[in-house]
Length: 350
Image (tube, rainbow, N blue to C red; front, top):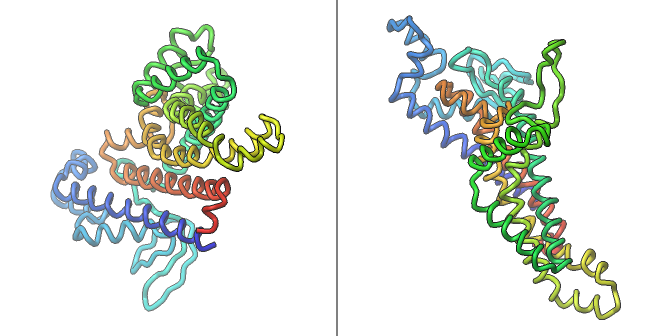
């Protein structure tokens, strides 16, 4: 219980610390560069229009107040003096102030003046699906291939797997995305039936209805999984070789337990601890790589939304995407810590 509360506290500190630094960066940028404000004004660049836009988005306030207001909007328990965000909430009034329990409020888009959170909630499920499918593919593929290499010591198989692992670790995500999209979606399309780009839902040309196309998930998830899969494969093989020399493993072997029984019940579980720790360390790289992979494959997730908001100088959406990705990373990190405790009983007593 105490360790769980510590994990939750670290996660919240990471998310809100990231949000504070992000707000300092972008509000400092906006106070120096008014390009986004003039783009919102369009052709009406008179002083009154600019002043009203700055007041609408609280850009006329001192930067510390802007940062404090942004973090207050993100907090599930917020305090407001006058206007309260238009999100589902439960509130009371204390000493002339509104104290509300609500979902995070990311502000309004600079381009459409719409609330940001619908954009985030629409893109979030597709990024979660892509990240989790890549994580599962990397975990099962890496551990399975590492176990295969350890169990069947065939020289040519080990050389092939080592070559694949080296290539996977060397290639960055954006280059892998272009290469895999071109090969499997264009050059070998007649064999794979896959396309270089596509979204989870597509519009049918005949009926106009939206239809689910799970095949479009294969190439982007495989692209994201290549690097962690290669690392996990090599780490699993090395961890299994180290774990098989532990004293309790030798004792189980001496008692007559079969090789397969020793491998599954004793060696594999001890070897998975460091492998799982390595997998959790790849979460940040996986979420960062999703930005480029989604853009290249046309996957309508947070990564594509982030790039579109960056090119359009729509900073509230951009900040909302980054904070949401930080929250996803923090949540997945907490889950991996919990699983690691289950795999290694020694951590439960710490």
